[in-house]
Image 1: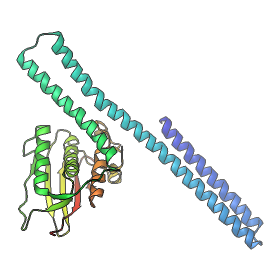
Image 2 (image 1 turned 120 degrees about the vertical axis):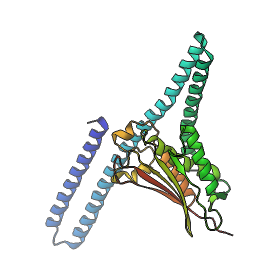
Image 3 (image 1 turned 90 degrees about the vertical axis):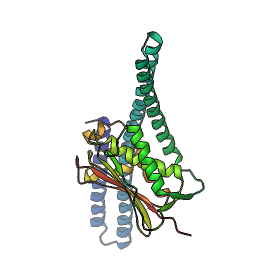
Length: 298
């Protein structure tokens, strides 16, 4: 049992004991003042407030301890995500500086260093975007979702060196005009890329991802299906919280900051939409749906 788990158990126990004592005192007050209506009512009201205050205080304290634990996990994850590529780049640079290498080796080293630099950029970008989302504004424009999703899929294919059969997307032929949403292209691109990136990372080598673009009279939906680690039913809503990561081994093995899905949810909300996840269970894959209101024809 970790120190934080012990703290949570202690404060829950303490809160429960205090509530029990308050209830016993309340019952005693009722028995003593059963014939004095005014005192009886006042006593019940005050004791109810005391009990409510104790319960709220205990819940708040437990939440703060858990939030502190999540932030520590986030700091550890970000530190690892920053230190690992920096150490790798430094090692290759020292190798290039200290000894002779062939052209083939140089190309391999440069390719690895560029990949590590991309990893650094991605981590820093995620952290900065999470910080900006709460106060970011800007003009909204009409965004062609077919073109945007196609661009996002191509981007992830190139980043992870995937073939179209591993990451499939067939742009649908809509009966009328291509669906559009009112938003910011950069934010929507971030949300869609994050969903597809997550599907790749949590597939654990079994990359079989299918992206769908659907539209009805009111909404545009982007769905990302994968056959990866899956999500336990109880975790389906929690995964969109800041810093939260599903506490199963398959997820812990993948390094991350716990910000990706939080960013997606924040972007969806700011565009008047929502994002939700579905999964039959652990190791059974999952489906993430980004639902956005369709831009009016006017």
